[in-house]
Image (tube, rainbow, N blue to C red):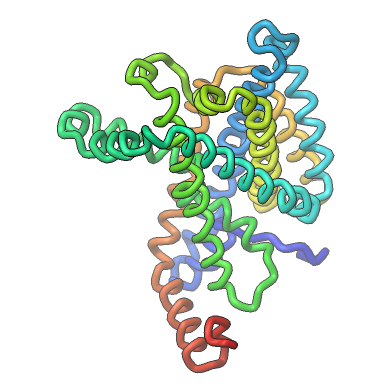
Length: 346
């Protein structure tokens, strides 16, 4: 951009990449389609869902259903929207500065807390692992509800790590690097840490503590179930877990505000006025998320995630030969010594 800032992501690679593949006529429409989808979608998965879960945990630590904030989602939402607004006004550098401090602390604290709960319930670990394996491949479960379970799994996996929808590429495009392939390797680590490590720990915490078959139909979900699991073993953990959950939600709100903004400016054009309009709308939806039911937020978000993923997955398929070419070039330059191999250095 003229001011030195960088804009990137699927909308840009769809436009430029499809042009390289002699599909210029399709590139621009696909870019606009993705940009519009990410603008609308960011209001669900990265905004209302996050603020909704943050409010639920805030209610838990302030007295529950009988507490002052139980029916005052508008008040918490207003405060959260103001905090988000203060940070995102500063742009990508301000967002990066805040999230780079929050995320490592949150992740480490959550992992340590999860390991503590699992260790204290170590006698149930074999049963938990067995339950995961046997229920996943149970013939009755597969024949009765395999498709439904798969759809639910895909939906929640996207909520967990955003793999396939291209949102993280918007942030990675702003990174200064001499080798784009290395940034791709960094991006590959994110789903592993988030899903394989943190989500597996969460599942084991739930299965080794409060899980009972009847809970499956009790309507308990989201952060409420996780909070109950931690509290059953560490009674004092409710407040720390709530703080961590709110911090996770807050950092996610900040990240998605940037994703949505880049889609917005791709459509509207880069200008200070356009940015202010989007950020105001985004903060308004953050407040709204605290005032509606979780099911409504999930239904809205699930539908939009599918729409966002369509153009991105299409683009990945069409541009796979270019990605393969760049990866081979990078590996060849490492072998030739053009790029230093850090693993071989003393």
